[in-house]
Image (cartoon, rainbow, N blue to C red; front, side, top):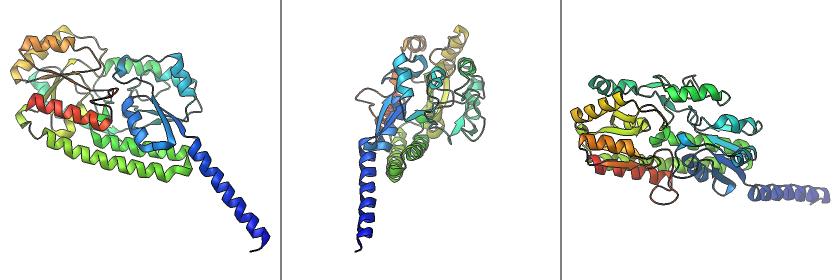
Length: 340
């Protein structure tokens, strides 16, 4: 072999070795807003990413307030992953100092549902499926009044009001929507680290296969709940995608709107109590991340013995809902046990 060809071959091999070493020793620094997104990002990124969550495990996303350390964490990230659709009303100040960091809305491409207008009466129950109709696709259509991170004031106002037509951001309660997350995350990682693009995409495909299996498992878990008992009253409105996908009706919420911070209207609460009595609602579902005080009051007033707590916006720090798969399985088992 000519000496010049040998030298050229060695240079190519050396460049390849150094590129591989760089990819292995410099994982992407990824910040996710929630533990749910962080879990999917870890599955997709594997050893090639370091993932942290802004909102701690077991916390209420609606009550989260970022610290100066969070500002620095976002500014130092290679990729920031957000749910979008108005969930993260705290993002305004954080992204102002991270102009060069890609902010990836993992829910882009998901068919969005509107928040239901729960009036706690029979008409509202009959109209529930109409309220949960698809209003558009996030990222492809301007369907959410509060999806723009650069308009924090408008975001907070829309977040407080949640009038009909505003997107319900709680997309992850349907595991098929989390498949969209995995695909979007893989593409974001591939753009930031092209050398490992095939790895990220393969990991996303594997994660999506697990989500398909989980979906089938949840259908089986819920099969013990008869159709006439597939009615839900929740602490706040966070389970719409689950209900639409698995054939349940949300007949009322204790705290109106899509946030745990909304004020409670005594008249609406009284109407909810009457509705529960009229419909024979067997259980009320509150969230582990928030105080179930009002839910317990409603349960007492209606004679319901079961106030079952579910995981909503966050994973647990360990068992029983330390991963997304465990999270949805736990919720499905709790609902089946309460309603069967």
